[in-house]
Length: 173
Image (cartoon, rainbow, N blue to C red; front, side, top):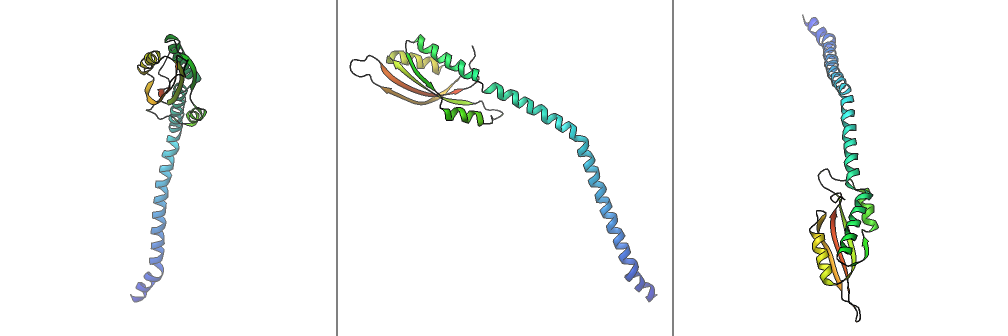
């Protein structure tokens, strides 16, 4: 009996432990294989959804910032200056601003905003009417700066620099 017990501890027990370890590893491998099968089966649907979302994002981005939006905005501002008998000296989004917009990934819920600076020359009354009209527009998001240089002696007009934030894509013909 002692020999049988010794034989069991020395030979049979390690073999049984090894067999149990192999069975556990096999069970874990089968679980991993099942997970891999599920992933492989779901991969085509995931890729399809990913492509759909990428297409929707590209479409939305193309609608948010286009050259046409800028041109429509600038044309609208120019028409307003003519209407209020002002001389439009310059409209400037800075080059840095335009480059930033091109690099920026738009947020899903936030429109793109551009800083606009308009340099005008005219009477303060006409400038006031122009600014009142601009500030009532949908694209207008708030003032950044406003400076007024009074006319030199002999000149009847003032130079005005007015900066504001404009939401792109909100103005249409």
